[in-house]
Amino acid sequence: QVQLVESGGGLVQPGGSLRLSCEASGFIFRNYPMNWYRQAPGKDRDLVASISSTGRSTDYGESVKGRFTISRNNNMNTMYLQMNSLKSEDTAVYYCNAPRQGFWGQGTQVTVSS
Image (cartoon, rainbow, N blue to C red; front, side, top):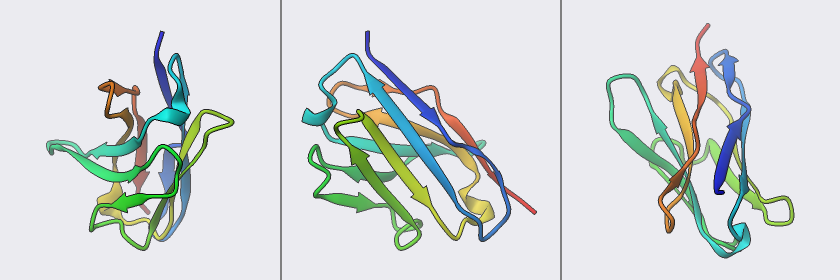
């Protein structure tokens, strides 16, 4: 059974940092690219960052470039999103996605507010 389980969300002040994790099981994690998406209330789900199966190639949405870093540990079957210099507009539910299989996690809430 495939599972993607996100963790690490929470409430943080503007300018702060959070690190999200996505633990994968039920498929050969190291063979597949992965994504982070986010969805703010009343808005579409947007792609935040992508990472290749090896982790050597990454890509970012324009709004998070220079502030967020995607990474993965294939030995731990886990993907990460380090989020720095957080802004109120980063407030959203963040989802882990395995695009080739169409799998999604349940999401973790990130709220940036003073």
